Length: 517
View 1 (cartoon, helix red, strand yellow):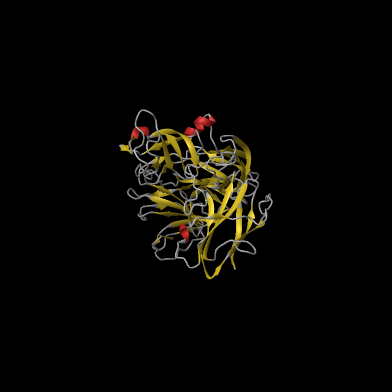
View 2 (tube, helix red, strand yellow):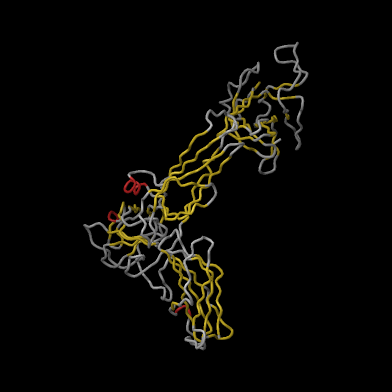
């Protein structure tokens, strides 16, 4: 008896069976012997674990046209889409069709005559299990003395070990935000708004989706593969090919259909494999990766890191950033080699009926990138110059990649100072800076229009080495005694985090602020 998603009961002919092997088996198909078949309706076989359907195989009426046999000699096999692993235990398969009167299967009952003879009777069950005939009600009863004639086919593995190599796919193109292009008037460089693009200077990007003429530039001079000349975390720029006018105006343009290729940077990788390891089976993983470059770093992109041990479902923290490159940059920088490969080594010591399994429908690599830089308006030594530099003292538009800005705090009692405290983890590549702004008591000025002021750390703290090592940072804004701040009734704090390595980043917890008077 089967039940649909709507709760309707469906007549099914079921047969139970037992998997007795200690570590289970992989089932590939089930054979059934039919006495008669329908010329109109298909028939389905459901493999079940008593409570739910594990797999289904369907035969059409045309496929069943020659399946009937008057002597129970013709076998019809129901092949599953993939081998089904069944641990030791009880299972059943059920046959279902809209034409239940035409489909009849051969079965045996204890005490009855064997087919083709009136002298020899069925005297024993060959294996634990029983047939459950269709029922008109909601309860289906099994007949312990009857069994369908069937065969179960199990996989047999010839090797004790093997390897599977997974190669990166080309990252999909990305639809950019509306009007992603911008530039100064008559400038030959096009700025592209494309966060998390993954590119470096001299990488190739393929732009598509421009139509007609936009901001004085024809589609033919924008669409196609372009060489990147500058990057930051917000996007990149490339030079418009010669042979035409420059851009008309300093505006955003392009439309809503612009696409671009992309790459994936990663400072942390997590392998996510849906796997099964019955008995003594095991799977180990290793990876070969390609290096990237931090925004303000000195790393060399497109280098090789091989033999990286990976543990399924656990983070792998890299000491330098890596990437998954697109096909055109693999051709340019890696001689058409793959930027990322994962090797799975499968082994088994539990006999030839089981094997470790990886479900390719549920397999992925998470690429996690820390978005952090260390900006300067001009210097490129342990800094990066962004496409559009804005100092963090600006009231609204500081350009640093990583920051935390508190909500404005309104005080019931005016204050003349602020104490800022937090626990900070700062590696040798990292920097932590506090900025503040206040609104004087008795004024109606908007604090959001005030410029930020950089605060001074009370006492320098050493670099942190261990991942769980933190030091207490304190800032006393306004001084300990004679306050240098005018009395205020509103304040706001901004914490800016910087690093020359996206793989070694500062971290902050337990941020507290105290208004002083």
